[in-house]
Length: 88
Image 1 (cartoon, one colour):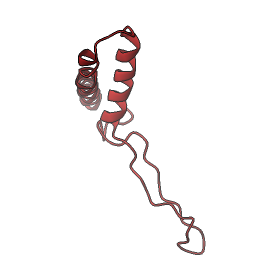
Image 2 (image 1 turned 135 degrees about the vertical axis):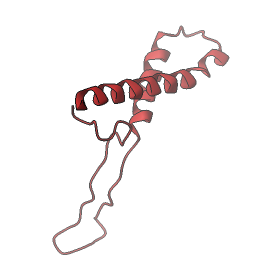
Image 3 (image 1 turned 90 degrees about the vertical axis):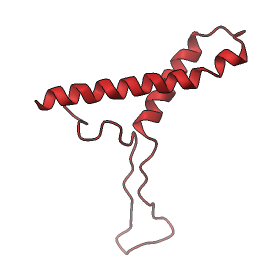
Image 4 (image 1 turned 45 degrees about the horizontal axis):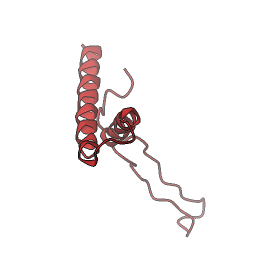
């Protein structure tokens, strides 16, 4: 299964770029981007907020990130479980 080696690794890594003549002002350093956990949480939060009515109390809305990370953690755990099964 693809991605089994790093279930919670980076979501959008970017390699560095260096020109043929060595480092210059236009070079880019490598960047790991956001974590897969943060990506999953952001998507979960987007879905949760889309379901709430416009007049939802702010106290309720402030709970959404907590639930979003709980969903992200569950997604990562399931992903890891499936990877473990695929490697057996």
